[in-house]
Image (tube, rainbow, N blue to C red; front, side, top):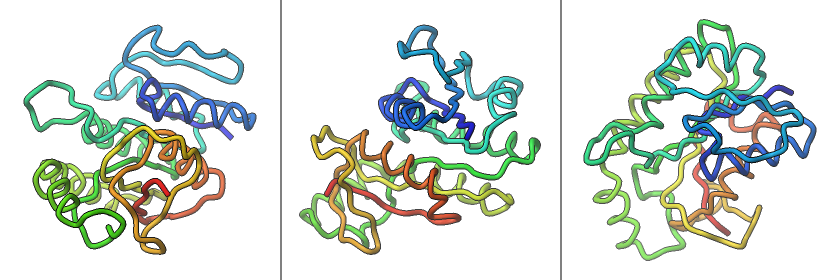
Length: 211
């Protein structure tokens, strides 16, 4: 398959490139900093630009079977603003996918409520969601509205907070599991890889955490 990864030079994006290329898929890596990916060139095409550039976004998805936005939702374009690369890129990518008649889109969002968390102290979860990440609610709702109005086969992967972990590929998925507050970048990438290959969670917003 042909995979396009936006934010491919992020920690999540680099893991995704490795997972897909090792499975013999072709990857188009969309990055904003030249030289920020130092990986073998086999089955890998690199496009350097910004996701507000509709021409480059359209070019990046032309041959894609699956489009992934690997920007973490806490990636700020400018400090001390509420405008995040994840949300802005979602808008452009969705619009260009509709124009190009593409279907499969996967992105990442912060969790905006506490009802699915159960492994961690509820006071910590409430603090993380309602105070630290309150600004993500509008971003999620904006993206969700765009996707609901589209004909895309979308998945929004929800997370609470990222943290380093050695538990590679071992994660929990809500609502089947009571998840915790943390998930590693590798586990986010591994989950996205898995649902991409197996075409899972179409038009759903699964929540994941470390196991």
